[in-house]
Length: 160
Picture (spheres, rainbow, N blue to C red):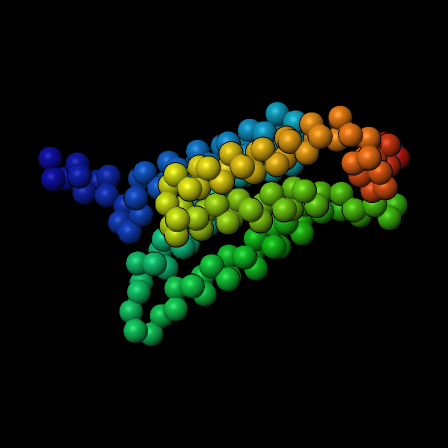
C-alpha cells in the first residue's frame, strides 16, 4: 500500500490543485473553442497548469536566499510572449488582442490557485467567461458599443 501511495505522490504539487488548474483552463477554453477563437481548451488548460506548476515549485523552495515572488514576475513576462504570438496586424488593424489578454489572465488564474486557493481560481475563471461572453451580448443590444475598431464590419476577417 505504501508503494501505491508513493507512486501517486507528486510533492510539492497537489492533485486537487492540478485538477483545479485543468478545470479552470477548461472553463475558459471551452468558451473560446465553441466560438472558434484561438486559445481553446487544450491551450488554456496548459497555460493555467504550467503557471501553477512554476509557482508551486517556487513556493516549495522557500529559504533565506530565494525570492519565490520573482517566479510570478517571470511568468508574467513569459506569458506576454505567448500573447504577442497570437496578435496580428493586417491593413492597419490589430486582431487577437482579446486572445492575448485571455492568455495573460489564464496565467493569473494559475497563480491564484497557489495564492488565493482553488475556489477563488474557479470563480475567477467563471468571471472571465462572463466578460468574454457578456460583452458580445451587450454589443448585440447596444449599437453604440460597436463603433470604430469594435465595428463588426471593420474587422480584418471581413476586409479580406
